[in-house]
Image 1: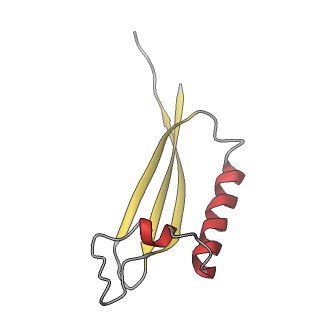
Image 2: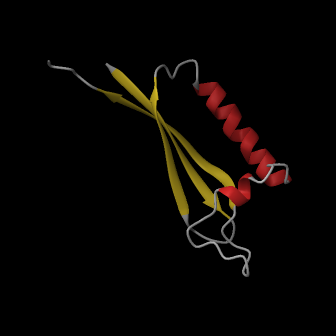
Length: 90
């Protein structure tokens, strides 16, 4: 039995802090691969263009500093699809 997960690495303005977000329980990845890629690219475009609707301010880095203007979400740096094979014995 195969189980899939999607792992996003989030990057932030003015800091080297990164956050890993994992979405587990993805049933079939074949049909979702291009959709996930397109959605991640669309999010990055909206973050770069300032049309993210507040997303950059919602997912802030742990070292966020409003005075220094660092720590707002700037991009999805990496998207990884993880495939785990499990063998159920009983």
